[in-house]
Amino acid sequence: MSDVHEVRVGSSDDIVGIRKMVRTIAGDIRMSLVDQTKLVTAASELARNIVVHGGGGTVRIERLTGPTGRTGVRMIFSDEGPGISDVDLALTDGWSSGQGLGLGLPGSRRLVDEFELDTAVGRGTRITVTKWTR
Amino acid sequence: MERVPILKVGDVLLISIQTDLEDRTALALQEDLAEQIVRTGARGVVIDITAVEIVDSFIGRMFATIAAMSRLLDARTVVVGMRPAVAITLVELGLSLGGVHTALNLEKGMRLLAAPDPGGPPGTMSGR
Image (cartoon, rainbow over all chains, first blue to last red; front, side, top):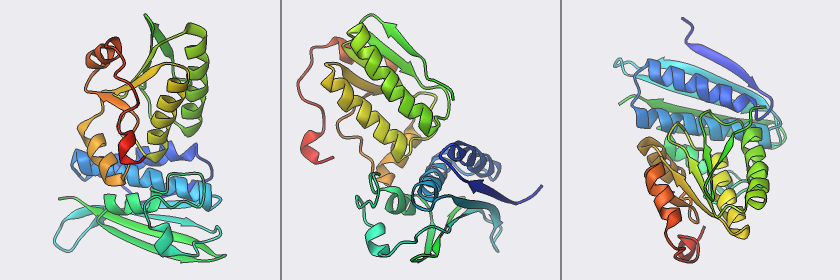
């Protein structure tokens, strides 16, 4: 069984498929129902960001096993869109460059254990999030 | 594209969401519902999300939009059957759904709509 999945996200229609895939992987590693729900919700927010702000991109989903044997899921959302010029602002609740509620980035950061944002204006954005089973 | 059926029960329109909604389906539902409220003269809308496994900010915003739109068309909206994991996640996400009435299940939601309207939408004092 492959532990890495990479999916292209071109339009909002692809988001449902990503939610389903993340749900399956989180269920496979016996993540609690609440943590599964948080992870899938974060995936939905970040995948939508790729569609709305990045003009499409890819989502990579990996199943992790840590050194102590604990398991988790890592998701990498990449796009080659305009990038984020003010990262602090983008991570502020309620601030939105589009028509959204401005909860996508700050909200998904709260839903996962690790959150890493890599961005360069004109070159794109890569967000890496990890959630571990408890 | 799938469409979510809207059932009429007395003067209430009942929407039971049974699938993981695509964005387009959610947008179509808003339009269908507005049309049905006007056509049927419904006074209440119940959105049953018992089967819904996740509510992200897009779907959350759809509930708020439906509630606001229904209010303008003289109907009240109640979202019923939210799963505990969904409620926990929504709060952490930062989405409080202010302005949307909720009830634990369909029966309580219908009872809420049958009671006299207590006035303005809930949670309007606490910002969004």
